[in-house]
Length: 286
Image (cartoon, rainbow, N blue to C red; front, side, top):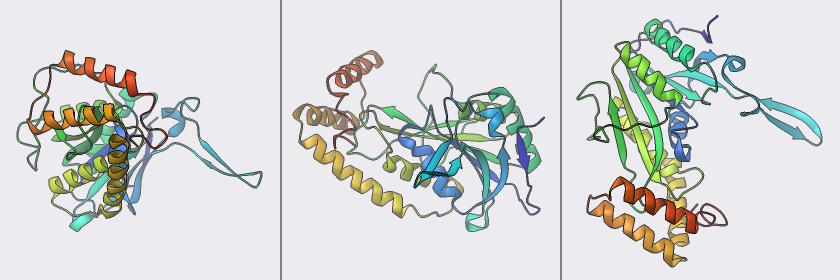
């Protein structure tokens, strides 16, 4: 029994599949926010079986109660929507990261790319990093073959990096192994910021648009990013330790240098231990 139900459009032409899931590599909800903006108004062409994919005890449905009466129940979902910016077919996979059946999901995503004639995959993600909120959001890339990334985004990091995988990465890996050209754009957001980080969503949306050579407005997100930047500036200015730390991150970015991995981890842990309880609360750095 398959995990999905497909309503295939008759005029679909070599679509690009853009994918973003919440969870492990969606820091600041940047990837799913960018994907949701991209898919806005799109037609749902694929729905996935939530009962087969989600553990409702860890990802509970939301109950809305109005005047003491249960009025609405919203379940976690995973869908693919079709949009046509500038006449190009784009499919957007977004929603909650599944709890179960990752292997089956990845295999069926490969099957779907073949049935829908997908020409390329663009994965979106966001990761916490030692970067300051006062500088442009860095975008790191991955690619299944050299030369696929666009808009001056470089693949990285260099060398071998072993990290716990996200479902989006499993899907990317299996689809690229099946022969579909695949790239990933990953925003790096300040590790000291909690909650949504719209500046990163703006940059991810721009990265997708540059890759596809289309335009999708990010004005609303850009407005939210400006407001958050002002709050972060005010929070940093009010605390000398935080201000000094942000200034050090700025100098590292401006000089295009990074400390050793061991030193960097130690510094982040010390900063979060000293100030972590305040970050993202009470108007501080959020």
